[in-house]
Length: 158
Image 1: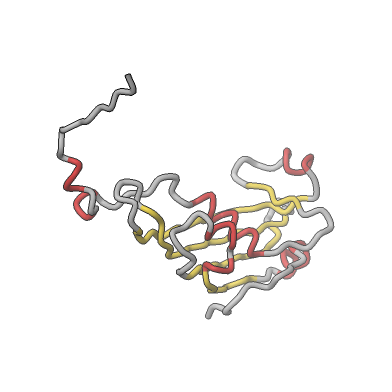
Image 2: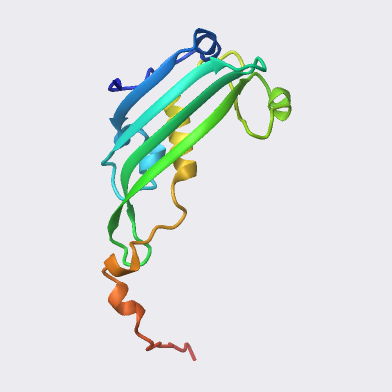
């Protein structure tokens, strides 16, 4: 059963050694940078993160994130619901040099000696997974009646 919130700071290496998991649900409004890209701050985020040490000895965070949010349709400029999902596999590393040596299947999270904030990981993954451009399905879009029109108006500055 999910917790209501994420811990604010985690020693990722210790959690990986322990094999700790996070299951959380919380409001989208908690993620400031992500909400700036949305129509509004309504919606819920659900996340699961698994901290572990893999068979190669790499400290890892694998997880799944989903969020039900509202974005602006670029065709009609009205709100529309979108489900944003991300599955991720991160390797916890200490430096850029360590990150360079990772297999291509893993993205690095460089932590040095610092604790991490799991909400930062969730926010970055959601931002990267948000559609670049969003449209209602053509049949459902309020602007769809204009799509079949062939009248084009040109305005000349001359």
